[in-house]
Image (cartoon, rainbow, N blue to C red; front, top):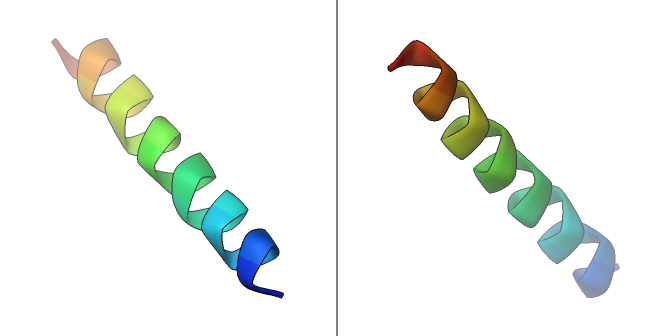
Length: 24
């Protein structure tokens, strides 16, 4: 469960960074 939660957090962080780079 914990590993799955961390995977979701990491995925969300990657998505945020990707969106931020695209905005620039």
